[in-house]
Amino acid sequence: MAGPRGWTTRGGGPIYPTRVQPSSATGLSGDALGQRFADLSAFLRAHEGLWRPRPFAHPRLPWAEAHPEVAAWLEGLSPAQLLALDRDPTPFLDAAPPAFAAWGRARAPLVAVPALPARAPPLPPRAPRHIPARKWGQIRAFLGAAAPALEPPVARAVDWCAGKGHLGRTLAQSSGLRVDLLERNPALCTSGDGLAKEAGAPLCFHPVDVLAEGRAHLDAHAAAVGLHACGILWRTLLADAAATGAAAAVAPCCYHHLGGARRYAPQSAAGAAAGLELLQGDLRLAVAEERVVRPALSSARRHEQRYRLGLDLLLREASGDDRYFPQGPLPKALWALPFPQFCREAAEYLGRPLPSVFDPQDALRAAERRAHQVAALESVRSLFRRPLELWLVLDAALAQQEAGRRVVVGTFCAEAETPRNLMILSRPSGAR
Ligand SMILES: C[S@@+](CC[C@H](N)C(=O)[O-])C[C@H]1O[C@@H](n2cnc3c(N)ncnc32)[C@H](O)[C@@H]1O
Image (cartoon, rainbow, N blue to C red):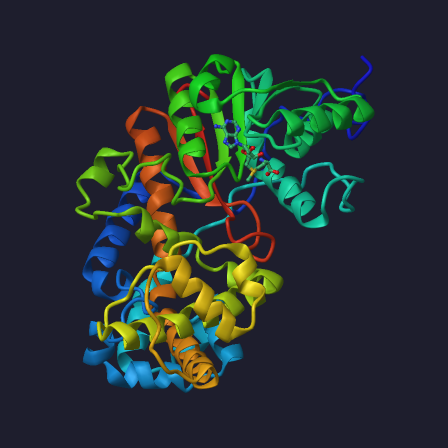
């Protein structure tokens, strides 16, 4: 049988489905999922005062008043040290004030997630044309870890929110499986279709909204795969897979995309009983480390944050009201202006007065000091980013388990490849 042009086995047969190679990696499954979820729920509940209030909005944080030594220690760290602390607090704990060290040590076992058993997919390490190198690394790792979801009786895969279809196309090329790709944006479907024809891969793009029509593409012989589909989209993938008996492999991202809802609706009975109320703004914490992994983005963010903080100080001074006034999105063009002009135009846009006399350089210097302080105090919230992310992933995983499915959660790649490196594998209970 002639396979698609790409990476097939020597005999020309499909690489997937196959049994996964034995591996010491295990992921979290069975009772361990519920136990970890309960431990995370208790940890997050016990420390709400540390992760809910945002330093940006609160000039005086209750925890910083209770632990001034922690605030002073953090403010004494350099920007580079703060970034390193944000990436991994462990090396800092010995030198940290006891309160911070205790939070960090309680967190460590809760965020230890085993890797999923995976075999290296038969894909060249070098990215093919059209696929960015970083995305290629994610795709190789994703397909290696997703292999159990592609075992018989699965005969077809569905790439959920496919973009240009890099994942689905690679899967079709490496496995010979037929792949249906669901993508709402018709322009992405058209360019993805062109790439599929070039590769000779057995793909079919469907320009559909997965929320309305995704389920119709799933059945007991299908596996839905989703690499970084946003909040409501990957949660719908899992719910639709459970309803149709399809297998699923999903790498969640954008936890705060709730499809317009302001409040997170727990997916599992355990989540509903956890006593943790999460507003959309709280969920942003789970994806807040972009500044650590994307330096270009981070310098633009730092500039924007400095301007916003400077403006905030002036608005507070003019109104005599020391509460944070949410600025919301501001017109993009404002960020390129010199600071004094930015303040005038942004204040006019917001319909708020500035002080009648102010020294913009002074305000900017104060904003810089405040920006460092905010970054320093954010380090305490950062301790809770991964616990919250894992809580949200385990909530979805437990909902699948409660529906009688076999579920495994683990990492599919190193955090350096992508900070969104968790995967949920979910299969009907009869699956091998
Ligand atoms: C973050 S991208 C991920 C693309 C791809 N999985 C990847 O990893 O490259 C999310 C994709 O979801 C698509 N999308 C968003 N909402 C959708 C919906 N309701 N139905 C189908 N596709 C949707 C977007 O157009 C976008 O291409």
